[in-house]
Length: 111
Image (cartoon, rainbow, N blue to C red):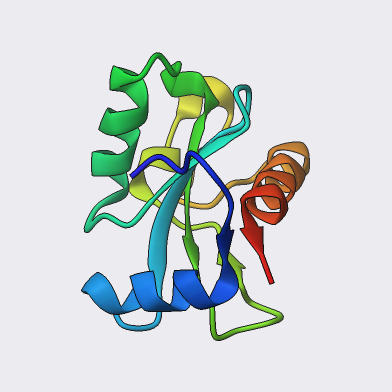
């Protein structure tokens, strides 16, 4: 689901229980500053954002762990493997993109 309004951390914890228990998959559009969450695969969220006008180059996958404070965001997704954008691993390697993701998450999920 693409978030249309902010959610709380307690709502995110509830969403985590839908599929994985302790984790929520998420994809951010770093240009449009929007967030899609709650699917079994990052590629499902990527497809939803693409269908809503996002560009693939702007989409980055990661996992949210609502019970964790230090390791709340894990930058790990198959959709992040893109050699043409100098990202050769499942990780989000560019610190600027990581910071954009953090800003989007902070904007969309309040404590």
